[in-house]
Image (cartoon, rainbow, N blue to C red):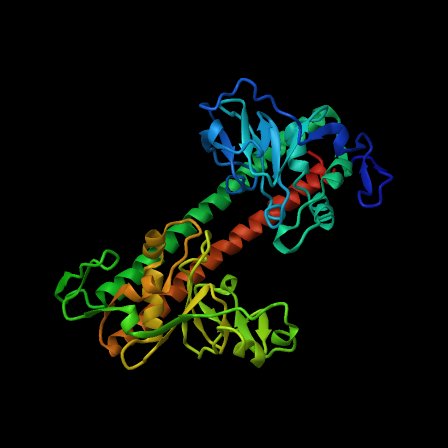
Length: 429
């Protein structure tokens, strides 16, 4: 066991005897300048919006320099970029920007750039991912809600463990090997999950458009997402089959609409592609009366109307009475003609079709579009049988997905623990 010494810093504790402690500002420049003088407006450069910065790597993307706002974050070959805003920071969005075709690039304004000096960049890259730094950086955050940012003052003045130069190389090489092995395991599990999700979608689509009997005569529906359907099934606009509307948000400046409320109020961020049993917020009777909110019954089918992420087009079934905001649509079915679970599965099958109709920007799904959407309508008994079949199939697929997600979580935690132990000197390589 190697000799240790007191670092003199309470939160760091003991370090290997040959290691030193410094501050980040002495071993790396934060947000350094970059030379773009040889880059013209017509040149293609690396462009790194936040979604391109992953957990340890970046997805290469290029854009015309002249088409990008020059207020974006500048970086060059070898620089480390790291998210500064929540939740991207906590998620570990960090990468070394290497092999840039033009030598420089522009990225999200919500990125820090670290340029190593007197320290191995790859060692610094791993050190910035250790538990202690992440926790202390989170404590330094300022801002409101989802816009909290890590303090640049903290980043500059945070203490860092400094092994001898040759040991930095050994640590970086060791973590490269081990993390590559872990990442490969995680990638394989993620690939299986994506295949299971695709299989689930195909099972749902096949059942709600073709039924459960493969021998029935079929005919073309004339609707893109449906294709062929059983010839005796009806085809109808959703607007002819449901009570459709959207909700509203009581004035948040009026506490009497919110304080001590006992009526569940659902926001668009709570739609989960499954069932809604509870909500984070509640409103009062007065809040209901003074907004477009309506108390919706159990088994109402909900649909997300906006969002660049996955929310737009997601669906869910209410298992408790709620009101909802204006960014959600509700559909109340007449169970004599349309079973709520069958409608729910139809919207699952239409997810990518609907998003394709409105595009992947912030454009929303409007009520007139929903009302005009076609769905195939078997008799109510078949709708229930199809829904029961899909409940069973989807439950089994979800179980398989959850198993692989637990494997990913296990190896992700192991990777974090390994990095922490190595870069803080608790484990020798």
